[in-house]
Image (cartoon, rainbow over all chains, first blue to last red; front, side, top):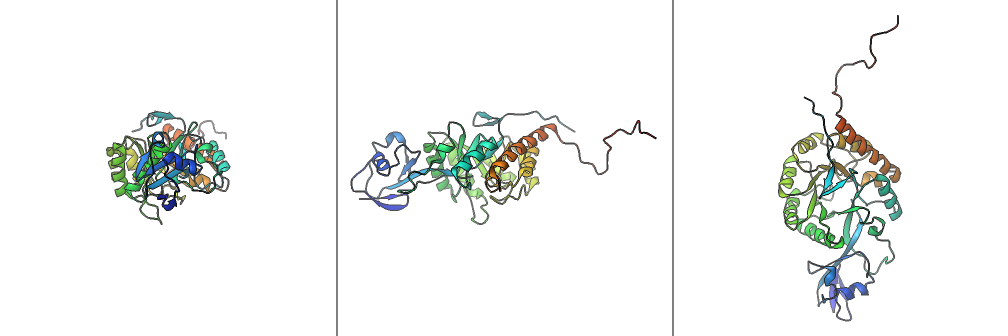
Length: 66
Length: 264
């Protein structure tokens, strides 16, 4: 299946939770925040939130800015 | 009629800060310079931007929040780069999640890429939503006193008019508008954007601003760490001069040395 990840189509070979996606992207333990279909996914719900076909996922972090 | 000014602590969202200089983290050559400049500035509130994480790239890239630790600094996430209320609101929600539920945000909605002038219509819309959602909104705006008044009425906790356009270093382009905003506001007024060098920051503080937020003036200086120190002193000097109350300007001379006891 495919999801939209940070604005681009991203293939997933298996169904994943948000926690699984974070792990898959090697972002575990990093300071990121996740939005799924325009709604925030709280960290506490990463494990229980399952991704579906065509879900739109945004993963953000802090960078330098003024 | 002269009034002796008394010092008031600089309080943002219930927390008192001793530094009245807020700094951005953009435009530095690397993370090390960012960390050193910010330490030299003495700033306690530091702005960051929120952006998409690079997927599959730069996995070992140092994370800004590891250099600018939220344990040491108050992190002020901004909505820079947003051109409408909806994207700014989404960015603030992501920032709150990113920072473990902290509600402090810098709302900044731009209108135009050439001027980076604030879009006050979208800013007013977003401010209403964010205040309703419990955010502590420090809001970047134009130097229009009426818009500043509206943003205060909505419930923003600080109003931050530009001194000049972002990144121009032109200083306080319209001091008279800023004076009107300062006279009317009951919440902290910070100059945000346009400061170019230390004297610009001092002037803003002498006028009675609660604090100044800057990024380019430090990061784009030839020696950013040195300029960060300069800004720290400039802000303190300006605040002290504001409290001290300057002498009146006069057209003609007034001798400093007494005329009595002259020889000859």
